[in-house]
Image (cartoon, rainbow, N blue to C red; front, side, top):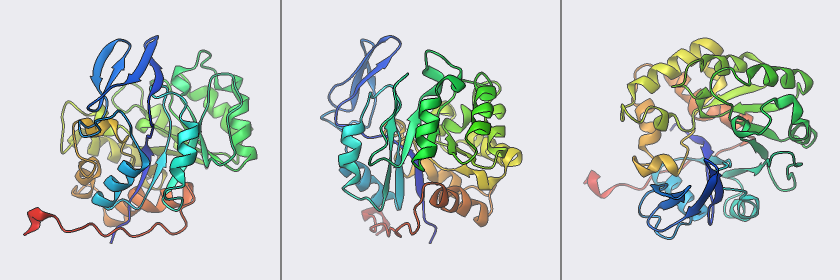
Length: 293
């Protein structure tokens, strides 16, 4: 049975982030106030504004997902305190990222990785943010990074890769694949310790919706640039679940005939298990659905 690792999820008890110069605040029924506008941030069954580890693990069990990486985002604000508590629910199934706040030294104790929202930094030159790269390499952590669209930051990331050759780096949101010049971010994964994860790809191809033929084509194209062994699946849970189920966020790739069984094993588990240090991801046997009778 194919094991699945989700390289891109989010958790929070209450959002306290920023967007467009304004605040992001949790409301009820899966909604948030984003710079004064009410938006559907999560599925409507998340009624109290909380996006908890218990809910994520329940969704993982339902979909047959063995393990997950919890990253962070400026929309949600610093969730370090909650993520340390959340990991205790299932330390063998969760890896957590601390949040890099612009200009500060990121937390390392208890965390597996560090998240840097690079495209939203006041100073976009990544060589000016040595503290985050130094901390990750010194403590043997991985780095999750989301870049500005296209090749705006790829040159400074190349320079940083040269300075920190032992650092494991995952480029997020599949290089913002629907934006011009996205291939420049995928080419970063030709470097030894750089990989790409697909969190948010269903959001980026949202207008075409399931089964996301454009996303399948993009994954195939990226594999041609850096190799399938450098690509990892991610869901961007729970935001993408505002429109689709958790299982739908990967089912379209499982059903695709564009990838071999070996490529699917790399994309869904083998690469992520090594990158994120999941030595033996548990096999999750989904419960039989009432619809299967």
